[in-house]
Amino acid sequence: MSGSGVKKVAEVAAKATKSIDWDGMAKLLVSDEARKEFANLRRSFDEVNHQLQTKFSQEPEPIDWEYYRKGIGSHLVDMYKQAYESIEIPKYVDTVTPEYKPKFDALLVELKEAEKQSLVESARLEKEIVEVQEMKQKISTMTADEYFERHPELKQKFDDEIRNDYWGY
Picture 1 (cartoon, helix red, strand yellow):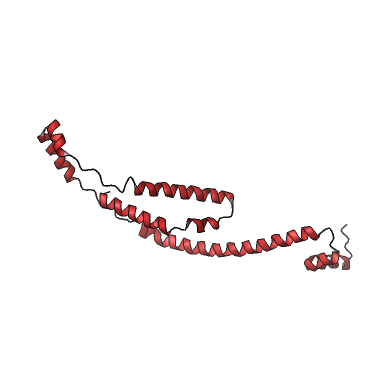
Picture 2 (picture 1 turned 30 degrees about the vertical axis):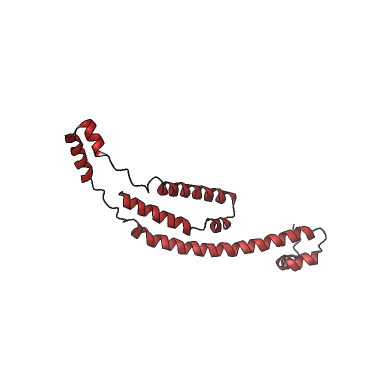
């Protein structure tokens, strides 16, 4: 990759880093395993970005051809200089992104839908946890009528069994 091409990649990486809301994404994680994987992703991203900013964004030092002419001889150095200057590094043409961008966009739509479903399910589970904790505290002093108020389907089942003269044996 040419020096200017590498600089452009480094600039794009720097802009991408600024637009990523790492803290916002970290707040959405619920499990320790997810947090650990997220930390690995962030560390890897930072390492690659650091390399792009330092190692690959620098222009190569110019070759001091005169220094080599003095020690080796001008004919051999001129031959190497001509060969060096004739090297053309081809420009990178991205053929992968157009192929996968529609798939990626479709996955983003799926992700948003899954996120919505996950938030709804999470709210339902939080509510259920609160109910179970309340039930746990009240179970020792709760009457059957209070229990059946919360679980009318069980009351109906027991009433049906009594009505049908089914006593469990």
